Length: 535
Image (tube, rainbow, N blue to C red; front, side, top):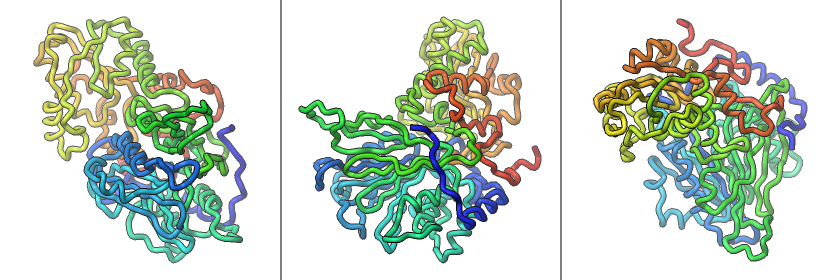
């Protein structure tokens, strides 16, 4: 199936909104819009959906499957989560449970039992501190004239203000500043061409996609079906899986106990599901008890290439997830190989900052023929350092997070691989730790290019002033953190590594968003960038 499909002519109203979008000042990141600076590099969220196949009521514990699916997506969001289920028989009511904190703290056997149903969707969220409130927990549920509607969203709309004005002008009230609620309310509006006999949800979804070019992956539940939606640029990930019968005596590969849809495929095996495929950029898929079918595929404006977030490969995704037909771990290893070719150095051992740089370190070691050895011992019970509020606490966090394996580093020349540098606050204390353990030389290799620009599509990257790559070049940064040298993977090298294992890497429609590295955004986002006046 092609990644592009037919697109209906937009109505005059949509054209006017598109013009408004192009004239709207580019939005700030979510933390900045609420007067807060983000504390580091964070993803926004993960979505998951499940529907039982065959006769209902089903033997598949849909709520439990969704809960386990969200656990597998916990790395994408750790501040709140929610699950909404339905028996699929009545459009008026859903079972809902949402809360703040980790999934293990929100869900237990008792509330999972209360969520029994034949289909459902779930969401796990990462937010800035100012937006970390229960009112923003997803999935959002609204009650329409045609029944309840539940929506879970991963991403961030780039034309929030113009879409908000349009929704408010229709007399719709909004209870939060969340663009996810905005999407939910926009879906409740009639499409321009009208509806003859009841709600035409695919038409409403298509209308929304034409109004909002990016960035989103959505799971939408209404009555007895789930819709999966990926923006036309394919900026955020979304994939499909099949729940396989435990005892399949007929050996029928088409037989399924149910179907799942998820931001990543990493949790499929743990719930007894097999990866089927990605949702294509611009695709609307419908999941019913009968299976999965494509409703429509919305084209990108002006036949632009797709723009899958390249940082999913670098940092955000779990290493066992599959994107574009390849495992994330394999791509990260290839990044290490390309890095070894671009910046060789004489050393005794190659190692990594665990676990983010480990795959790239193995790739570097294989390409350079320098042995890999562990040099840092990680305390797994200390949280990620980027969520701590001050520089001092972040640096103290590194000391608590790692210990040095002195027997492996004493007197050695070390190549230390990490996936990225944001502010540069954590790598310095790690180098000091290794110096104290007796290392002779430390050469830092970063398996991605320098981060220089903010993201407006669902990643909370700090302002340009806070990004260390905008303050210090690699030579000055090496001196600043106490390394003997520091080099980054080039943008060309990263793209080469990402596309190395793709069968269709030469196709014209293949593309990756490198906006945070190059400042080249996938869609026209005019207006001044926040914090750009002094650059």
